[in-house]
Length: 295
Image (cartoon, rainbow, N blue to C red; front, side):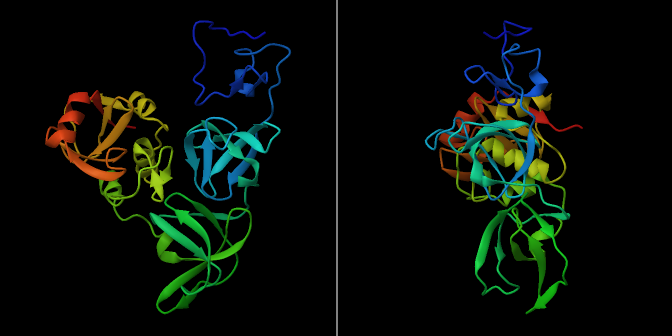
């Protein structure tokens, strides 16, 4: 048996971890779900070893609900006993099931954030050396002792990848993004492939794109389109940088009519004009509102 203090509604299972079948719940839900027979495990801090798929269930065929980026901070909540673990992405509290081998202990040292849309880590400070990891905007590596190596005008930084493996990255992949313009950053993703649940330029979905570009400038957004709409201030007249919302979809406005979005219609990131063309008219008819970051 299990109970809730509010029997009419369940906590949002996207961000609140509980499992009536296993009688497990996160400690924050103690007294809200479950009873004396339930277990409330202590979360364990971990990070994603590489881009890590979080799925709706502990099965390889389950839908991907989100993706953790290399080095991104997570909580390990509990396991399924078959190599799958329930995890939470700490930056947005989103939950999913991931493979145990995709998790590593949090690193120690100075964290560096990748600012290139897509990048690679190399086995040595030279472009002809072998690739040892794929990186992306928002991924995190750790600076390790050692001098920056200059080779052919390129500056190479020694780093440790999540899990501790030694590698080298070009300094340019860590350079600050020049202008705090979410729309300009989103436009750099044009033609990136659409992937349900994806959060990187290797493949991403609509709310993954908007979350990623806002986060790059220290503006955290929730994971899903409906959560993002609830988090932003509603506005009637959109401007550059506002979000446009549709049933199950979100795009980022470039001005009062054009938007950039990752979409399954074109299976890539594209620009549309509301009200123009077949797709633009469809989007305009389905628009449920606009949201603006005001924090």
